[in-house]
Image (cartoon, rainbow, N blue to C red; front, side, top):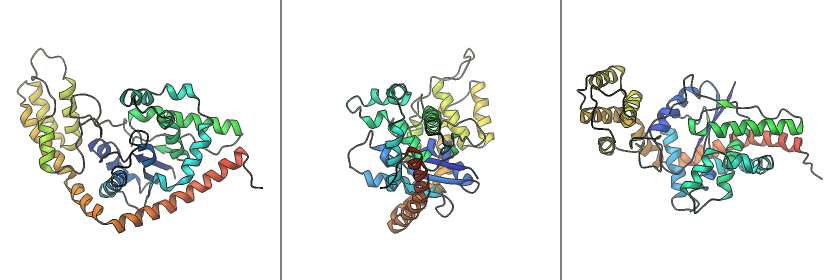
Length: 329
């Protein structure tokens, strides 16, 4: 059975991109593979080093994971910092990662632009920590978006480099898990790019119906199609991409026909999109509040998840340290 791993940083609430890009599929996948899902609180410190709301953010994401359908009785769900073996493997893998290859990663260049006042070592070695997350469980498959593919390739490189250097086969080389389709990228409401937590262009699973409607009605479009228009503009194409994720095929076909005939009213399109988004996430929204309020339940989940994850992590680290040559006196 393949081992599958996925994590998310607790720097905000989960949004539609998280849900339709991966979480919706995880509920099925967890019954078909050995799955590890974690909250990457160590990763979040690279750009959010202050303790303000740190624990609350972890609790939010955990509750949203569970509300979206992840089952702690089937999958292993844990908090990254509860597994010290990850940090130890991170140290060891850093010895095999080179400055030049880390500086060339797109994510590092982007983070330097966005956080020029906080270009810390954690930003540079972010891909190594991600590799440690994956390799500590010797995962075979990792659900990743387009923006994380380069990090996954770095993980493969480090796994291969370790195995070759020490003449062992400790680590498999993980591949992207895309649920049988192309990797999904849900765009934001600002007319370009993907939906994100910090870009101000997202719809979150905790948003209520009124909030969703307001956000969607403010979404960027254009002045409308004309007979001379050769293709759909990016902002409008983004709206249709989200619609395809939440609406029925008939609804999508209806608005596409109106667009092709140049009779579409973007206000009507947005109202329909808001209604379909709310219909899709309303049950999750309700469960988030219920789960988040039950702190004892969340504590039991994290303790159980940490115990399972550490069992796997210890076994891997034992093999790694043996290969490197660590021995007790």
